[in-house]
Image (spheres, helix red, strand yellow):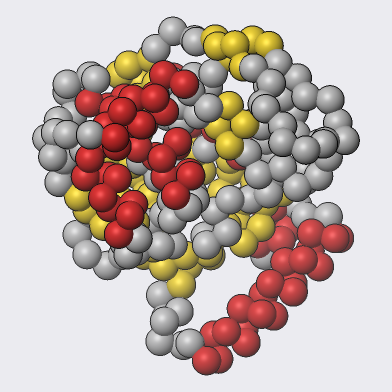
Length: 272
């Protein structure tokens, strides 16, 4: 039924069937763990577009450009390297009510049951990897199948979602996650709102977080891949971009864009 809803190609059906066979074997050994597993199809929508339509954006910064120089190369490289002006991702903050989020992910399911993600809409071809593999079992054009467990506790009243899909990786934590805290704190309206972070982060990541969390936001740890209801979600957009391109050569002004402004501020705090 799910396959018919999402209108999959034969190859995609085969991939999904293999995943389901694996999942069936997994269920045999993990019945208790998967007792409340949910699987459903969602329509993808850009977070920015949804936020605009629902008047959920409370702050939007002007588009920024920066000049990116060629990297210094040690040794030899087989391709030409580019340099020039690049446009940074749109920097905005949305406030969304009655949504679902997933531990260790920046995916959001709206109260209209749409799966919200800027990157998954903008980079939707097979050239790019799907980052949220802990909850996304299949993606096809504008549809995605999510497989997840629900948190059975009361909804989280309010929280700031800072995850980037690769939170346990030190590089991604420094350049994608921590700058969002500084971006949020610049607005002064969310100083008392807790940060939603993954459970069981490495000690080094926690130390870096403590140095950047200068306003002492309370921390709410979330289990990876578990769905949580949030009454009022504060969503800061990505200030840098690191795309997982698995096919073809990286595109100079598209795949990896690091905001010098925000990464430099994080670096300064970490040096103190």
